[in-house]
Amino acid sequence: GRVKYTCLCNSKGGVEADLTITCLPKEAVASGLFAAPSSSSSEDGDVFYVAAGGAQKTHNWRWFQQHTRDFDCEMVDKSDNMSLISVQGPHSLSLLTSIIDGDTAPLEELEFSKACVVDIAGFKVLLLRLTFVGERGYEIHCKYDDARQIYDLLMAKGEEMEQKQGVPVRDAGYYTIDSLSAEKGYRHWHADLSNYDTPFEANIGFCVSGTLKTTEKKFLGRQALEQQKADGVKRKLICLEIEDPSVPLYGLESIYRDGKCVGFIKSTAFGHTVGKTLAYGYISKEGFQESQLMERGESVPSEKGSKITNKWLKAGKYEVGDKGILHSAKIHLKAPFDPSNERI
Image 1 (tube, rainbow, N blue to C red):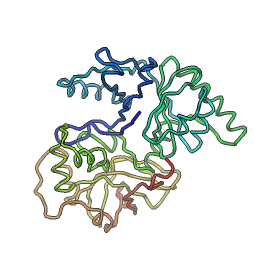
Image 2 (image 1 turned 135 degrees about the horizontal axis):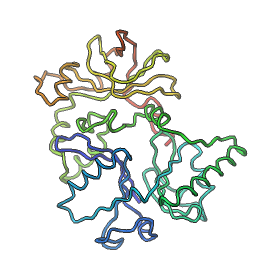
Image 3 (image 1 turned 30 degrees about the horizontal axis):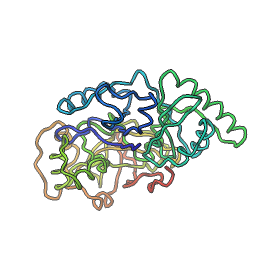
Image 4 (image 1 turned 135 degrees about the vertical axis):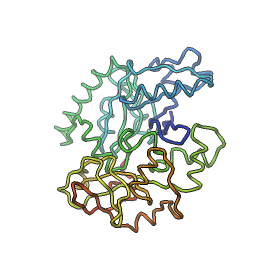
């Protein structure tokens, strides 16, 4: 099965949601783990599985309902019937191998952004090889009623792994996810990604650039995104590393480039691997006041050369303003941690 991280866009190219869509393996449908909608089956059409952030479930469901009316498809909401257990870290493969029933080859051979069906504790589960924390990782998608037994088995095997190999297996919450994802430059919809921000502005243009380049397929926002790609982006999400590791940030601090206020912080977290506070915010050459007008949908006089390039970004000196104090910052054009994705 193939897994795709992608965006749902609006007519202006803004991101209404970022999520994963899996083209389910035939065995996943046949096993009963994912019963095919009544109007389709594993023989007469593909069955897709959408996994999105729980807090945005209603918003995303409404988007699909609104924009699939003219398609020959049927949607089924499985939110109350499914659970997700995320196993992340450099030893995730070893831990999962210890709990799989029978042949472990499908797991061991699973490539990134691919899916397979395996048995754990006697239950059929869908396994996706994905990460949101910057290390090798997997998602176990299982029936709600099976999740507790699978989790208990995971933790029991985790205790064995710690005793025998010295590898701790621990539960981790959203502060951990925020910190690790900040080091990898992963987006958080509602924090540093919204329905006003386009994929190109948010540095996730790969979600749409392939389709724009290789096909004529229509999708919501295509015209706006084609125009933006041709013109170049006028605002851009950047990653700043605060040089003083003792400085805490909370969001909405000002971003200065060469002494001019050019934007503000949208999200921030302390990166424990890099040992620095990391902050993300959108900037524009026009500056903060003009950026505010743009976000409200008001017209802003276009400046010649207002397109943002990596050369312009690298040439600037950056500071973050907080409570009247300017803190020196370093810009990262790639992820601060593992920019080449060797660890995932």
